Amino acid sequence: MLAGFRWDNSNSPTLFKSALNSPKISEKLLELNTSNFPTTVEGNNQINNDMVSCLHNAAAASLQVKKPPQSLVYKKWFDLQCRLSKRNLGRLANRLGNNHSNHALRKEYFAQRNKTFKLSQEKEKSVSLQPQQSN
Image (cartoon, rainbow, N blue to C red; front, side, top):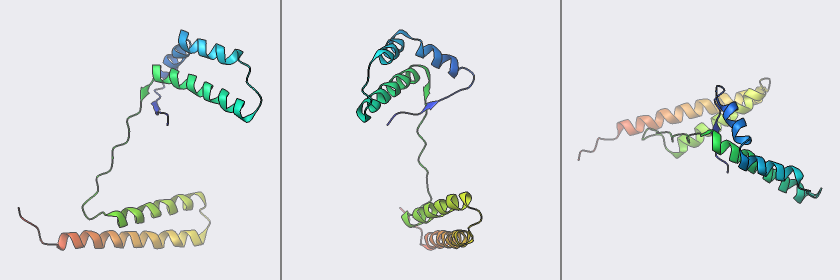
């Protein structure tokens, strides 16, 4: 998978253009332009891969790589069951956002929201009621 790049509107366009005009990338683009690829699926895939490779090399030479997102730190009580419930709630929210007029989906979303809320409250309460272990 290709790395993501951070695009800054102030100087990224000029840096990317200058990277595309570099001798190495220009040579690859000229070679790509003068090559005769067959008009088959394999030929289309080959020209696509070559073009993406040229653009990726130019981006790697000129742009900053995005930092990977940091992993979330959950509370002790927020276990796998809570995470799955929250994930399902988010998926329902996305579906509801795309289709506001679907009343059945709306009803399902609010039922899942209430279940998720109650589950998280129960888990948090059960952890807080456990006796504290001393070292």
